[in-house]
Every structure is written in C-alpha cells, then in structure tokens.
Length: 91
Image (cartoon, rainbow, N blue to C red; front, side, top):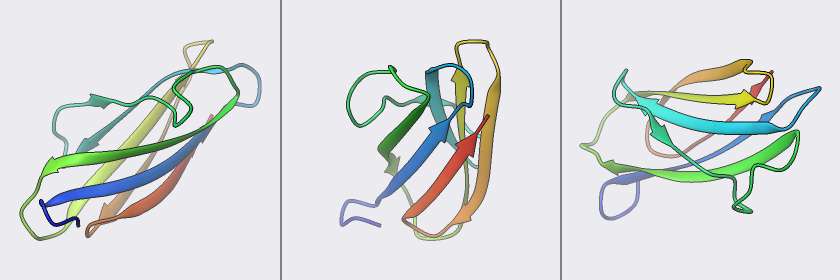
C-alpha cells in the first residue's frame, strides 16, 4: 500500500475477437469503479490498466477486475490482495 493507504493495481484484459469497450473493479463486493486503459483509449483487443483504490485500512481485501468487449461479453478475475496486485481478465 502507498503512504496514503491507497492500494495500487495493474491488470490486463483481452478479447479474442473484438476490442474491449469497458473495464471496472470492486473491492470486497463494493461499488464498481470504472477504469480506462493506460493509453487512455479502448481501441484494441488487449489493454493494460493501472488504478488505485480509495484509502484503505491495513488488511486483506478481495479485488474483482472485469472487462467487457464490443459483443457485450464479460470476463473477470478475482484475487485476495494485501496492497498491490497484478491480474488478467480474458474473454
């Protein structure tokens, strides 16, 4: 975790057929937070993401990262995290 209590995350998402159109994450089944690719555009079948949480208390959390493609298909990954994490969601 960073000094301000925010956890930093890196993720990748990909679709085999069409470009990605949306991505979001949630911690401990909380509110979904939209994220954008590191290049700022949903313009490819595979994208990289960097994002951070709101201020968190020390401890363990469940992070869910999901992506959606142009066909409306969703993919997601879930992981228990303690601060920083890397994960990939594939459609």
